Amino acid sequence: MATPKSEWPGFGDVPEDAELALSRSESQELARWVWQDGESRDGERLSVHYYANSLHYGTAVFEGIRCYPTERGPALVRPRDHIDRMLSSARLYGMRVPYGADELVRAAIEITRRNGVDHAYLRPIAWFGYGPIDLKPKQVCPVQVLIAVRRLGTYLGEGALRNGIKVLTSSWRRLHHTMLPVMAKASGHYANSVLAAHEALDRGYDDALLLNADGTVSGVTGGNVFFVRAGRLHTNDESSSIVPGITRDCILTLAHAHDIEVVIRGFTREELLRADEVFLTGTAAEVTPVRELDGVEFPTGKRTFGALFQRAYLRAVTGKNPDFVDWLTPVT
Ligand SMILES: Cc1ncc(COP(=O)(O)O)c(C=O)c1O
Image (cartoon, rainbow, N blue to C red; front, top):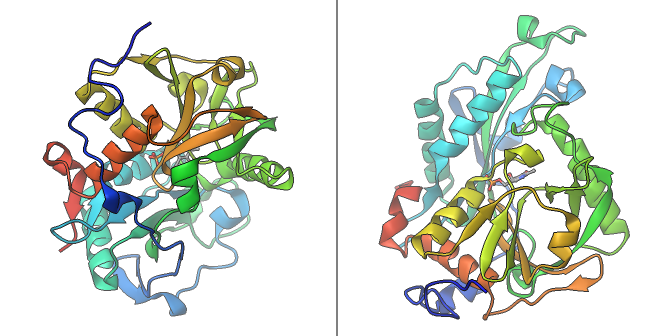
């Protein structure tokens, strides 16, 4: 049986960090200033046209970027990667965003600073604005962009990070990459996630797992899935119709840095049910252990890979690991 090369349990050089376990606010209060179409504006006075084409046809493209407090002040996690992904989502929808990546990253930094937040979540979003009834908005509708900021400590609650969540396999299948460009974060794709999340909620679960039409696992409603089996870390890739997460990439980088063997391939629900551990990753969800999938329980807590990755990830994004400071863009 393969085991991680570093001493178990613990990555050896990833110290326990009491601070990471401190309670973070669960408030999602909106910050006052929003960057829209080149200017910082008071969010109370913003309006989006009720006949914005994207509102009707689900073609807005968006991102979620985290801001964490660090010793050197608040910092954004991999903002350039998020903005690049948003611009590539926009391109797939024929949307010409009238700002470049550098300008949007600068705007994200400035609006975060102006709002004076530390634990926060930024939502850059681009959409086809007002125009006629038309399914070719790229010809006729202006492209608008905003970056909103809201406070965000934990997303699924402190309990979720520590104790894990209960996940239901949804009866809805994940949209396939031959139907829509699912690697793009476009608002319409999330109708699939909302249906699955509602189903989970109605059955008393915290989140839903979406399978592909062939029965392999895609992901959860807003995140990627990892599992551990015999000391190896497993996850799938874009051939499983996932959004290849930036957090997923951080976890793969951390695994590599700690000599943990990684297997990237499609896998089934059955394999997941037989896993030693399961955890989820995403900008909002961070690294969240799964404590139950469809009634099957998994270990959570300090002596798990999930907890170690969670700690290593949270240390990195709060500037406590000099090896990964290049993930961070200070806002001050
Ligand atoms: C469907 C889906 N998969 C995966 C992810 C994870 O992506 P990231 O880690 O870049 O936030 C997200 C979150 O944005 C998502 O919505």
